[in-house]
Amino acid sequence: MRRARWVDRAPWLAIAAWHALSASTLLAVAFEGLALVVPTDVVSMNLARLVESCTTMLRAQYSTPGGAAAATVGLTLATAVLMRWAYCSIFEFSRSAAVRRRHHSDLAMVGRLE
Image 1 (tube, one colour):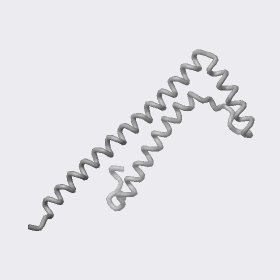
Image 2: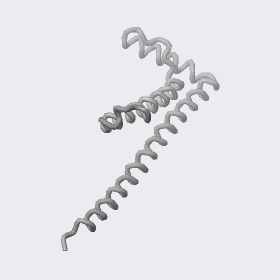
Image 3: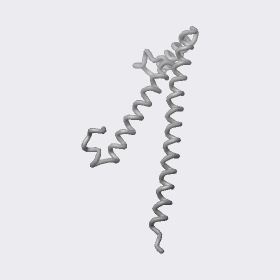
Image 4: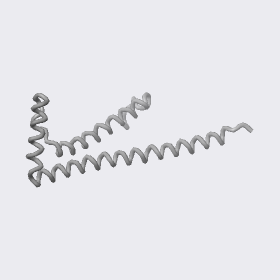
């Protein structure tokens, strides 16, 4: 996006595209971790059969130590990615709020009529 010429003409669209790209990457990594927790081999059937096969696969996966370890790693990965995203988002929102407050106070000081 640095080399794109349309970014200067439509900055809000560029910001939205950047956030969409970031969110899709984040969700892909989180769902990859969750895919290790819940095996989904059979998904093209009716709902009752899908729930039954999920229950059977979960019991089979968690009955072995390797399956439980893979599920734990997947859940840890998904949680870590989401927690890191939340931390970075909160940090950036608070930092931008502080910058806005400082900018507003600077503008108020400069813009006074005396």
